[in-house]
Amino acid sequence: MIFKLTDDQEAVRTMVQNFAEKELAPYVDEWEEKEIFPKEAFKKIAELGLFGLTCPEEYGGTNMGSLTSAIIYEELGKVYRAMSYLSISNLVCFLIYKNGNEDQRRKWVVPLAKGELFGGFALTEPNAGSDAAAVQTSAMKRGDDYVINGSKIFISAGGEADVYTVVAKTDKTKGAAGASILVVEKETPGFSFGKTEKKMGMCSYPTRELIFDDCVVSKDHLLGDEGKGFRMIMEALDGGRINIGAISVGLAHAALTKALNYSKERVQFGKAISEFQGIQFMLADMATEIEAARLLVYKAAYMKDQGLKVTKEAAMAKKFATDMAMRVTTDAVQILGGYGYMKDYTVERYMREAKVGQIVEGTNQIQRVVIARELLR
Image (cartoon, rainbow, N blue to C red; front, side, top):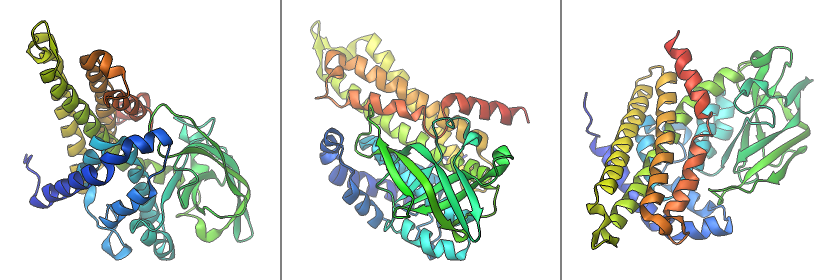
């Protein structure tokens, strides 16, 4: 097995590193503190060709593939986890590309891949989180239209995104087999935005409620066939889970770097705390777990690029990397001691940001269910 990345992949890594240091890092604290959605920063990211990472060039994408995408998300995660919104918009772009017809690709995929439109993924409901098949939002056929009624919660970039892929039941008698996906544009009559959640981290982009009250879209907004939505979601989430794992690796790497540098500077009992074996062991464990998580993420991404089934590997990568990030960021706070708990030092933000990774794209308890199910097939 070859572990060396290609020259092109290393060049992409360097490009994203330089961009993040110049265009993101100086502004992160302000975005977070003032809850500013960094739309201009995302537009600059779009200029780098990062909004259509897994879509072909003929539809405005860059078709970099899953492994190069993982490298990109890892680098963004080192600076600010909220840049993970890029993964959501890419997921929406790929979902429409993979399951849409030619007209839908031209209408939505092209501007999404160019970053001219931002995408939102609308699945979660008050009673449908881990149990994705339990969605109650309905989309009933009326002539050549669908009438959507219901609500979604915890939708990333709700109100900021322009195009939403909405999971709704077109047949409530069939459970998961009755779920379909419709594309709903922001200004559609009957579609509005409700409560904006107050979160413990990633405050720069809104997590918001979506409300559908007799929202009418034409049949041309249906992705694929009726009743195929759940399969589409599961396939798309494989890629999303790899991305979340990659972001978590980057976040943990940033926390380790802060802890490592601090341990060399902080003097107690007459010497740097990095000379104490207890601190050394913590740093060693942190570094080892980061490397293990990175390899799991890269393997899953590589397999996806080869067209192999990655449901188990994506779940493993997501579960391990996000659990690892929670441990590493917690240890980073511990190493910095009282300073680690203060907002003047970034490790407390890393710790708050790490937590959400264990929840989104399927909780880590659900990832264990997925892994076990795949093992037992």
